[in-house]
Image 1 (tube, one colour):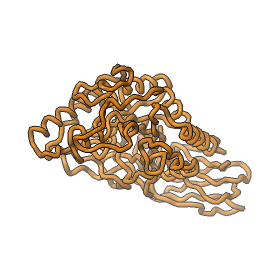
Image 2 (image 1 turned 90 degrees about the horizontal axis):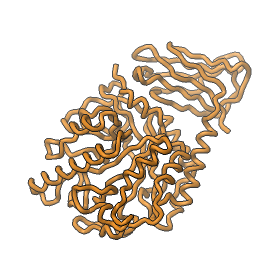
Image 3 (image 1 turned 30 degrees about the vertical axis):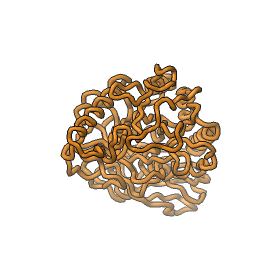
Image 4 (image 1 turned 90 degrees about the vertical axis):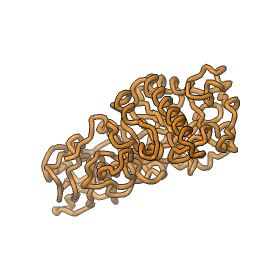
Length: 420
């Protein structure tokens, strides 16, 4: 039976993460072209405060935060020695700043798990397009770019301590296609990191859910079929109940409609808290983590409207799921909650002990209404968490029956709730 690493179990328990984008478009809204990127002299946030970022992430209920250290422009938020296009050559703090270091320090201060995003496949400054090939096609230029990637990820993975998650957007160009040899560096420098869209051989994998809407398909399994290529990343989507590699899905989405990076006067694009709550049901409630994008404005702060949105979202999650009427756990095929007296419920939350694998393949949930059992929902994948919601009913007992499983089910928690 396929089982996760301890790091993958911890990652699943976190459930909610934040993804912070900060790139040159914030200061140069016209964007950039290959070989014609905005001057680093434009990068000069005057109130940048990574403590504020992490405080808001914590208020939203996040347990980990991933910082985009280098996105498509190629501009680096740390003083990289790989090339000149970095914070080192900006007026921000007279070229003495290091936003990655400040971010890591704020995560440590607030007890947040830190992650780093580094896009290997796209770099306008280096004139490299997805999936990581130099536009010129020159093999020598490709080697130089690969050396740049190796140097920059080595800086990120050795200078800032242990990382909780490492994010590769779109995976990594394979070795067969001339890409950089990343896996040995991961094992050497960050063996405990969960690696999003990492290549074959990565210690602890996570996969893309297949969209940027914060919504997972159902059923959504934590396992995927084996890799076919030496540097392939896990196939996005629903996974496979018969998978041979543990690579759970992460459901990412921006907190503003189609907007990952801040643009002035676009507060109207903010998703409502109801929208975010629905995405929680359709991601965390379907056995994936929810990773929400957070924009940072030209001051270097989370905008006020976004602060309000994230804070209220965290409040709603706590209010909605913070009080269980009753719960049980254990091993077996049938689990019954005896509430003791007829009570209104409209949610059942089921969690497997995924450290022992995904065992349940089909289940039915029933409620005692009057003197008979009534089926209220049924499903397939449980994994880390399955949230079932339904019209409120009054019941004194709730029963989970595991109809099909590949080994004895181990249920970490079966709980009933009434939404507020």
